[in-house]
Length: 416
Image (cartoon, rainbow, N blue to C red; front, top):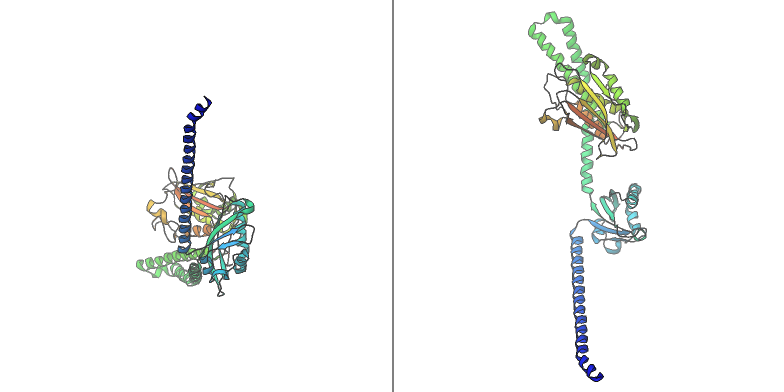
């Protein structure tokens, strides 16, 4: 019985063994095929990466943070005029070629990126093999998947020397134009003052000698000279706003608003204006003298442009934009006629006006405001007010921020 049972189970064992062998063979073929596919995918990725490296005009690099080991692509080295091992794959080689004036801010940017994740996007100069320095824009990113002790940071450099040359040329031309603007507006005021004064003397002392037509001509000369004088004064102020050094001070916006209103006392009394000032206006960084001038110009417009037979109504309140957390400021609301829609996009351009000649003005006031706020790295814009009127918003660096001016020192007095 036992022999018979064994003989009857033998085929089953053979079949089962064959099945296991076939299964193992199938699995081996499957994993072998998967391995081939993975190797092919890796090879395609590597080929694609190699083509990208050869095809880009940028130089690529990867640094093992905390070590001297850096991988530089051939293109990186070629941008500096080197080939192969002429430029060692070390961080020391980079530091030796970095311009001495750029070392501190470059490594500060690197450390800030590694510590806080702030974007690494800097410009610096590297010395070439031939000797001269060239400008580069560098961008990089730490690999978030690597551990802190084995972190890697990868990035690229792009040669921007030609762009820098164009920027410097434009900056020099702008500086020359500003100087011409300043000198011209300043020097023309003296002969214009003589024309205005002598015309006024003719009117006062010899009016009886003129007929009606001559008197009208003289009156036009006086009005024209007064308008040209106001125009030259505004041009001079705009030139000063462009050229002046911006002093980094901390002050309350309420202080400069009150100073601007003090300068407008006579007009406030004449128009019987209603003014509401938020007592909680913020503390900001900037040049108090120039911000006072900007507020003076904005408030002058609010008092000047009113609806017929209505008193000016002006509200000045604290304002902050959530999209600009480093800036804070105020909003100036009025109930005037507002600005016509076709004029809105150009109200901050020089000599652009949203009204006719019947209302006095040169069209330079808001251009001066824009220049002042821009020099402070702030923002200013206009919006129509709900229910009628205008709203001007001014944002400046908050008290915990600071401003930087790259302009050379110049006169900081506001044009008298």
